[in-house]
Image (cartoon, rainbow, N blue to C red; front, side, top):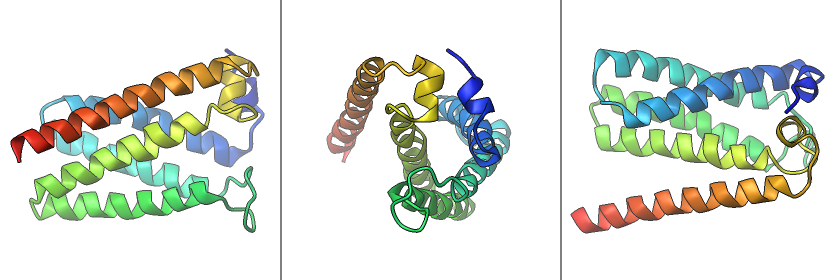
Length: 163
């Protein structure tokens, strides 16, 4: 593992990574810890700020130039911004089920799902984590995809069983 590709990257990418890494860790913590406590509310606000910084910083990253410097991943950033707003609104309205659904979508789609793609060959995170190795990222991505599918199917099964 080497940090050189990240240290050599443009400032927007460094800001993006500096926001998304703690968001990933804090989000995982929030998902497994008790909800509704003062600690949850405080850490949830910090998490949402990190998610907004992550999404906003992505608009200054133009490495995949499909349409005037933007790519489909930038649509995800728009959804993350709207999702953050929706999470806040629903929490304040005490619509906890909608809040949970939005936050899970933000975490698993915005961090886990998008994060898998950052490890594709040629991307900065691939160069950092695998030092340019072409096969290992596919094995890791496949493992993460299988784990994500398992979690989603488990959640769907749980909802069907209790509805």
